[in-house]
Image (cartoon, rainbow, N blue to C red):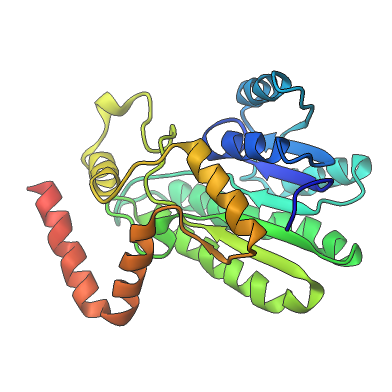
Length: 271
């Protein structure tokens, strides 16, 4: 897909990869950019950064944990912009924990990391089909292809994001709906490097170390530019970290060995 003259919506646009995607999209001359996040002040910062380059955007404050809010978002956006051609369902949350993870954390993780993508597709894909086609880019994680040490609900729901993306790509290929799923490993964002990391729990430290010690930590703008390249090629799996492809192949072809090696790696981080 070429972005020029397209109508683009990006969730999770207040910071990190979402803000970087907005910057990368803007320089490619889209017709419209809609930025969505629950963090209004962060959205305003993204808007200000884009304004320096002479780009204007539409801002929508929305908490994507709420299905009704997503439906209202779509109604509002489609009343101003007839259709979205390119949807970046980028918003996500990271909750660390194990079998003691609370029901509330499970619910929030599932609603944001999986169901927000399902609900956004439900609202915008039919309009894309009516218009002759469109493109959906869901942000998952390397955890969605592998796993995430110290972060049970994150690992499971990111697998759900990958599975949903695959289903969408297969079932709507005849409708000219193209789909990619972004599965980065370490990216320098607030999710990986939170401001309150000094008070992190053992699970949080385990999750953090397992990522930063497994490969290169990339900058968000570097990841965003890689995404632009891969959607130009209509690549389904977008893997900014080449080592993820190697790990994914190992997991698929020697699953028992992969599990044993990951268990051993986890113990090395704990000890």
